[in-house]
Amino acid sequence: MSLLKKLAGETAIYGMSSILPRLLNFVMLTPFLTRILSRADYGIFSDLYAYVALFNILLTYRMETAYFRYAQKQEDAERAFSTSALFLLLSTFIFTGIALFLAQPIADLQQYPAHPEFIVALILILALDTLTAIPFARLRFANRPLRFMGIKLTNVVINVLLVFFYLHFCPILEQKAAWEWLQYLHFKDNMVGDVFLANVVGSAVNFLQVIPSYLRMKLGINWALLRQMLRYSFPLIIAGVAGVINQLIGAPLLKFLGAGDLNNNLENVGVYSAAIKIPVMMNLFTQAFNYAAEPFFFRNANEKGSERVYGQVAQAFTLVSCVAFLGIMLNLDWVGLFLGQDFREGLDTVPVLLLANLFLGLFTTFSIWYKLVDRTAVGGWIALGGSLITIVLNVVLIKQGFGYYAPAWTSLVCYLFMTIASYWAGQKYYPIKYPLGRMALYLVLAILAYLLSEGVRYWAKGSLPVILSINFVVLLAYFAAIAWIEKPLVKRLFARKK
Image (cartoon, rainbow, N blue to C red):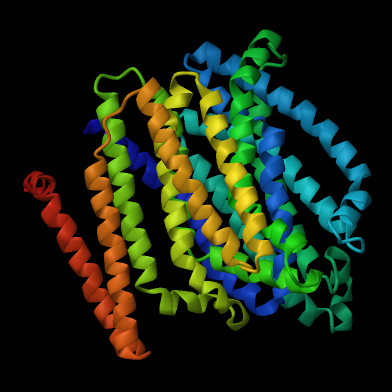
């Protein structure tokens, strides 16, 4: 129980560093951008950021996980840090030079020939974010989540403030002669470019904050260690690329394969990408859990009873995810108001996306085993299988005219497959006794409660106060059912409080 409490505490702190930035982004930027940007412009924004996520995996070589693996002792940690950080510094410098030279051809290829500045901005974001990867990993491994959170929060605050400044205040101020000079600080009459520019500045500030880590390290790459780290991380690169494909390939495929013209397809991308923002709480919890869990599992892999803790972690994760699923779905009527009116038609995809993210989190929980026993290739094969499902099913469904419903349902099928495959492989190579019966019960009850709320919606004939009131009772009933199922645990908790 002590290990589980420790992980819960670290997840909470890392959750603050992960959840607060993206929650600020959702609460402040999403309502703003979905009201000020057109569907097509929001689609451009979402389309290009899919490539940022993809190249972030390629440029970091998943070295942060390799660093965790080879930094078990203090002397090993210093050597692993300098080797991985200097290698990424060198490779990023080469990539940035080549990519900036090819910015216009890349813009042409992406069907944005008049906007090479989009590509330049994304290249700079990629380079700066890559150079912070190992310093951030060092903070996580050294159990310094508050410092980690401070840097992340600084980034998002600057990003949010600059987006508002560029898109709202600059157009107003520039109408006055005394403020005309502001037009030279951003992309005038180019709101998508301004959003990218704000991100560049935020990433630059992030990099400036981790420079001391570079200045204190010993210069020199241990080439033997680097080869070991690359061999270890190579399957993780494949798994990471496959993971990005599974999560984000829907937007580019909608753009290129949709039934309409480019503008219409980008509008569908925008609607779908806005709908994805609603399951943000489950996404954020999964990310916060992963930030804390990965170094936690490595640090405690040799602790007595760790396998039992892993099973408890999976059970706790499932319960929290089911509560998040039900909480969002029972309050979707007002949560959906965060999106601009033109983007709300995509809300029908939210329950599917929430379930997809729940299984993504379970896959993350079930798959820690292959990192602990150095069988990362298995994880790569599972992720590749998911990518094959994602690409084929997306292409088929988009071609059949399912529009933005295609990537939503494809995500659910993909992550369900990956969860089952990871569990099955894990039981073969690193057996862990998971309480699958309890976990399935949490999920079944959550889905039944959601279906009950849909019946209430039909019966109430659109009366929002009635719907929300009954949904609140349904949510309380779910909590009561869980408390009854976990009665022994609840008694122990209350006994300790006394």
